[in-house]
Image 1 (tube, helix red, strand yellow):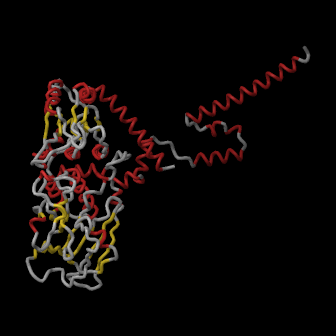
Image 2 (image 1 turned 180 degrees about the vertical axis):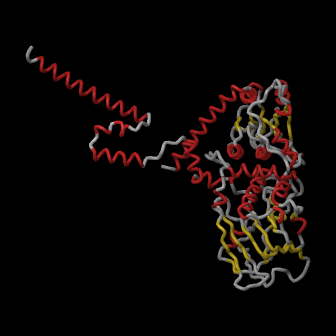
Image 3 (image 1 turned 45 degrees about the horizontal axis):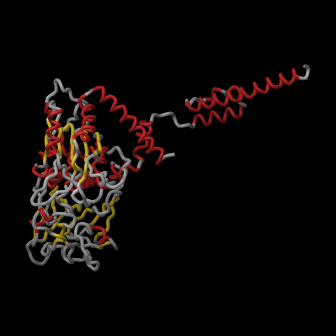
Length: 516
């Protein structure tokens, strides 16, 4: 018995020690999880020199911030800010690539305006464009021939550009290669004309600052909208007054509604001059800006990948300027619509319809669109459901129609570019063929804070038509969820809460990827 007592006492002491160590370890772990400053909590039992070190570390710790606060603090240093926001303007580097060593009223100056979004913008002084010969890359006779191989741009000729300055080596390869393409590798141009004006008329002298654009996909509203955004951003950087400018669309394409958008926004004081108006002439310019090509910039930066950027003040400001230019109000929709007391004009559901036109066959049509429009109208009589073919509308009408719509639905296609003009709190539903993955309109909705929904259910016809038939049950399984949020305050609160959580997760992901 005498031998057992010391063993029991030793056992108790060891057990107590183990429990104490485990308790301290668990306590510290809990304090870590709760982000409590346990250094100061246990400062009384730490040696004095360690106490001083812990205080020093504590003073240099970053103050605790919410994810939204931290994201706002770091946003101007993110890739998103540089790629799709005002960082794009900050990245523009003016570089003089052609300047005369002689002082002459006819001397040409060319300033290259490259950026992270494009490499072909430039500003020119004192030069001329010779259109006495104007071969087209790939012309068409009517809209039925329009397609991927159509290219209305004029080819580069040896006499196309008339300028007088010392051109930097290789500058000719990037300044106008997208404006005046050439399949002749030996074709080049130099600014070595003795005079910028040809020896024989006719010559047209342009006094306003000329905005020069050449369209490749002239029938595609999305790419023309992208070109307009690029042009607006560049002119904003250059601080050029729109009352002093004139727009020149120097290709062989047809006038399009998006030309009206660019002209109203960027050069409202003068009519648009088209390439067909100047063929056979030489046009002399005092000041001109070659605008960035349509296949560049924020809207086409991430067409084929997952875009992480959810914010763009640049794109939002562009939308606001468009509304100001057209004299239209940009009014956010209320978060929900009161089905009992509300006006049907405040609950418009717009279907962006894709239809054959001008003899051209259109792919990706919603085959039972008319039937589903009738069923949506019957199920939601408090709203107005309408199908719209934007190809038959003016630019101002397109903007007004989309801005008034609380829900916009459409098959993936160029007509969905009009979601650029959707009012805040609009739901956008993009219908895809199962095998099509493009992210341009989702990205645009993210930049503008719109509510984006991707829809893929239903049966597709074979490629390349890729039309879609959507059974009633499949459609309303998604559409009813959207309308439940539109029509019910409680559902909207829950929806916004989920969106807020997703936004915080996304922002934390950006911070974790780009910053330590």
